[in-house]
Image (cartoon, rainbow, N blue to C red; front, side, top):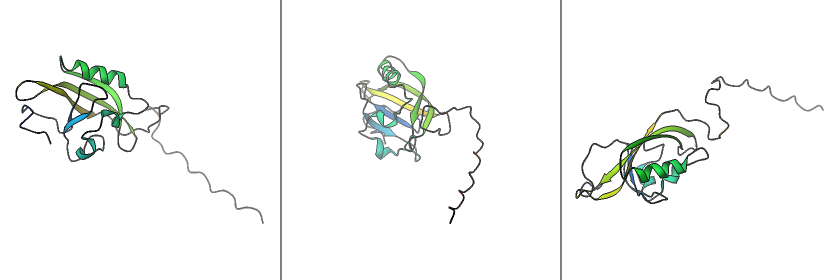
Length: 145
């Protein structure tokens, strides 16, 4: 949970973290729902970097740029992050400056909103593909005696 003595009280999304502005963007504090963020519980996130959610289709440069720019204004980006099972998720990320009670800028408030069901973690996945199950293969013929 957030240290309420240090961070100015504002309405907080249940799946919110405060990250450092400097790469690799260490997770400083968390306020995470019981389900966690993308399957990661709060205790799994503190003192880790946001790279815990990165995978092959994550636009790391865009996320880093957005975190740095959030010191000046709030913004929302769309990107792909990976859950604790390695499945790719399309997410919206709200980024805004986070201040302590003395109005000192202490980090970037990051709220992750899941936009999709889990997708296979490879880049070749076609999100428009049929959801039909492939036919089961017949068992192989027993070897000849």
